[in-house]
Length: 142
Image (cartoon, rainbow, N blue to C red; front, side, top):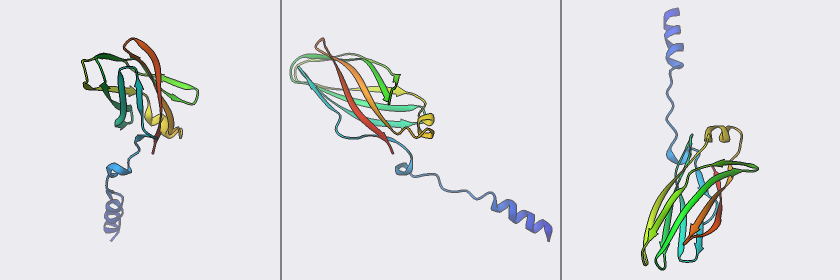
């Protein structure tokens, strides 16, 4: 009889719960539209990946005339803490064209989630046809 009780207790401890659905996992989202327009280019940003080591943005860049577009520096800002990310070399946009670019933003997202830091701003230093500006948009982790 004690062996049966022990087996039942051990089996009860091995209950497997289901993994969270994709919609139940924490992920970064844009708070609103992330659109940018300057000179000969228009751009939009989309959060495509979100995980423990950061997030990934897709940038869609369209030109209204032959143009170049570059991200010379990028960062994610949590309050007063800015974490530097990568850059995207100049994209040549001949005539009226459209290009997509991938921008990974690497940081310890696990730490941010555990600290309750779920609001941030993404800042992209951009150059459109050689003219520099900063494109900012808020993101939220839900």
